[in-house]
Amino acid sequence: MESPSGNRDPTTFTLWLSEIMFFTRDNDIVCFLVLAAVCCLTSAESVITCDDRMQRLSCDQGVVSVLTVAYGRTDSQTCSEGKPPAQLANTACSQAGALEALANRCNGKKVCEVDKAIFGADPCRGTYKYIQTTYTCLPAFHVVACELSTAELFCDAGQTIALIGAFYGRADRTTCIYGRPDSQFNKIDCFTRTANQVVAERCNGKSRCSVNAVNSVFQDPCHGTIKYMELAYTCEFPQ
Image (spheres, rainbow, N blue to C red):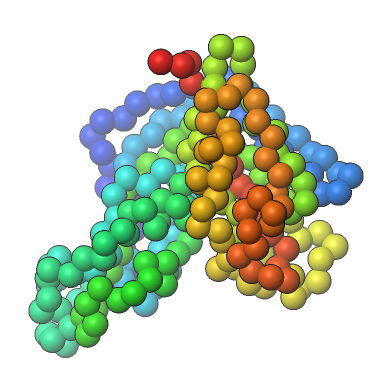
């Protein structure tokens, strides 16, 4: 059974951003939504999801930043209801690279849903596993751009871009679907694994940066599906 325990880290902190921008452009249509003077209180959330369930990370304010991830089994009690002892006996099961896989998929998103398939090969066949994740919600500039459009990232004078997360693909059936047939947005497990690297190399350390939401920049992770790009970043003073 899924247990989004919502455990709170005892240390909380407050950050302010002068502006959060949502940008999307589809052909000739451009929309801006600006929210000013947003104050966000961030803390750690803990989520445990059993092997046959979907894990959901979400932020009412800010964007997801994954802190820790474990996929496998480290005790015999978690997600044990109705399972035979043989499926719970191996408590030294852990998937290497789990943090990188989930962070690449979820960092910088408002909502992120994943299942065990994101981790690749089974680390311990015959063992019933679970995903244990801690994450926080970071204040950030959040940008969404439909495929074939451009996102503009920018910071005030003296500050530079620091990417939190980048996504290119499709993870829902609602974003950037206007005028599109159902067949172009039904595949929702589609994403480019190198999106963070691509955008970070283009934009980190710059005061302004343009990123095109096109296959030639990110490669095409799902032919025939209309995709979108989702970015989250902060503006920092250079060290």
